[in-house]
Length: 358
Image 1: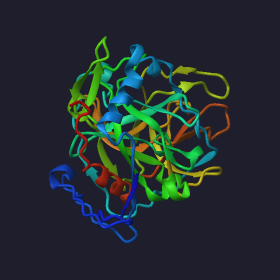
Image 2 (image 1 turned 180 degrees about the vertical axis):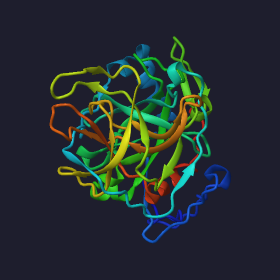
Image 3 (image 1 turned 90 degrees about the vertical axis):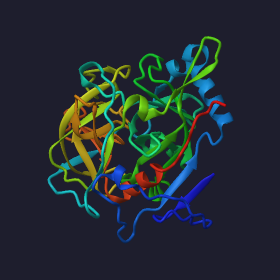
């Protein structure tokens, strides 16, 4: 079931009033004031009931997490042709931020917020992208690329059996497995395949782990366990961004092959881009050597603090590009996070999920 909301939270198909306002405690000093033409948000159900959610968890955790282990990187729209631009970003309003929640200690300051999102693709096989835990009212929100939640090859249908596993490596679920309940995206992404809006925010149930007999045990809320990246929008494209993802595969020239088994980090400047083969008017780019497979959904974090393992999510990788034609990918591509991105966040951040266990 899909529900289309305008920025006030009223359904465009039926009049349903829901509380959407973010408190000042969550937004810090920034309140959201909608400009003309503010975003419409589509919310699509994933595992709408706890019964479906338990079946989803069992699918991934059964047989020693066999399906997690056999999943392959999602390979749709991993590479685009683009050029770096010297032009400035064009915000659609005032800049704003939501503060992060520091994460637990981890080797080399790597964030526990990063992990893999798993789903069954239109081909009936298990695949994965990168995803990131983001702070929200109910501490249950995951950010990724829009086409890591909706299947562009099947008229935008939501993927089946969608879950998030922070800190994933080799089938392990160190912080639990979190089943997606619903996904929020910008209307223009589904209606027009507008890649300026190719991002998704998924509300997940509390995490679970499986005992040897298959019994599920709760691990609690996502952000309580791993921390949560903050959120920022209408920021200038200056300073560096830290990119966290699970790149897999190699560059076109065969160099630097990656396995996608471990979280990697790259740091580089950001800039505007022009793309020749993707519908996007104002994408952002980041200097990053990640190949496309596995990198889809990677978090772009500004003002990242290794001590707190957190900063402000300011982009998600939707593709990569070799901008200088030397046979090596040098650029990650993301939608520019503006006020309309913040509107999708604002609605998703107020959605409660709870536990899948009775």
